[in-house]
Image 1 (cartoon, rainbow, N blue to C red):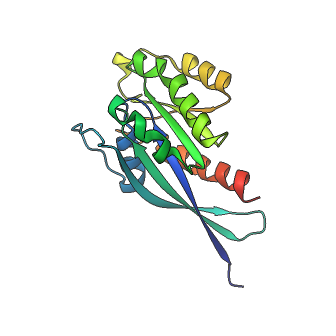
Image 2: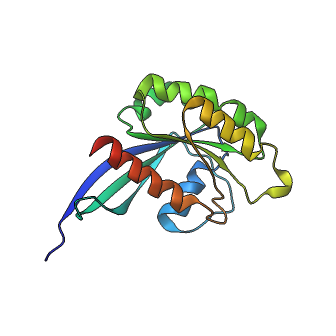
Image 3: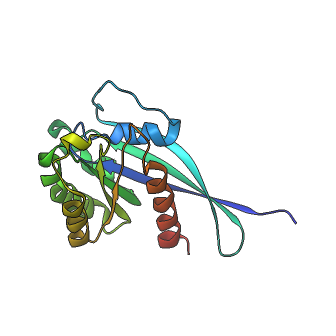
Length: 180
């Protein structure tokens, strides 16, 4: 018997302050590599990757994630409405070594909800490989995620820890939210 396949495209935005690792997370996920040097995202960048899921009907579901990387600099604030528009999922990223990036999570969440409404959304503490520099604990991150009604992840774009899991669970959540 030939296995049938269905394909769905979903726009997923990664938001957060500059230098929290949004671009690095996307590159780690889509290209399986890490770039040591920092270069800020100018406006927006995006990458596409397909996640294969098997549905309850035994059909293969190809969930195409169009991952949009929004520049976190304040100068791009006026463009956010355009870039967030049409997003079906969101990943809010903060740097576990930078408490200020964590303090801004609520503002990022408010922007997403205002423009996108309620969509599957994850709060992600990135740079867990920098254990000696950590300033935001897992419990504090998890507590805020719970308060905002978000799922919580911790990742390291450098080592790849939990990056694939993050996007696979996002794909499942998108499928359950929009396709079932």
